[in-house]
Image (tube, rainbow, N blue to C red):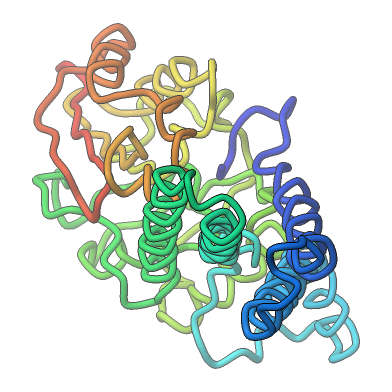
Length: 326
């Protein structure tokens, strides 16, 4: 989440992924190879040891990666502005979880097939789930690339001189995309800068990314909450919120109404959100069913006071373009 309620820390479940990974890794290395049917299958035992070690190392990296990174930064003097490449600071757990889950499920499928061959349908199901998680890893991996297109081609801007709000900017991926198409206007990049899946909350990374893109003079950075925007009514011509409003839980409606308040009449808001679908199922499996669906988003937009312009699929996710009534 980039800028939700101050009462809830976003993505704080990263530690849970790490702990579960450690438990699974130890199981694959220590407990599972000692099962009696596996005692005489040396190659399988070796494979499980290697699999468990990989899961253990990935889980440790997910738990300690951000702290180690910040420690290295402090030791080098904290000169993040000296970086010469874009960095969006994704938490290691976000990219490691899908493929480590795939490895654990694959190991479990092999063990189940060897020890309880009559349970082969369950082993097949675990194998399919492993393949699904690996597909999710490929999706997550592409989203971390700097050249990844982050916004759909829609009729969003009012003109070349728009004042645009990037509501929940994180480390600036969406801000950079806006800067490529908005040649003369100004962008306000707002976030709480406390998301624990972005290194150090993202503000330092955002500043460096803007410098590399040559956008420092055209982007103003603000710290604020999406549910209580620190702006006057009818301030902005346009607004964008990519993967931020959908992280507000029960406060989604409040966030939408706040964006409506600060938009000028006729101003448009582009929302990019995760909804139940093949991409989100590949990344988080059954948890994707807990996400708000397309019908719910359309209803929320209307009850918040917006008029719907269009919606559609984008990069495996979904976008909604709405307008403030004139």
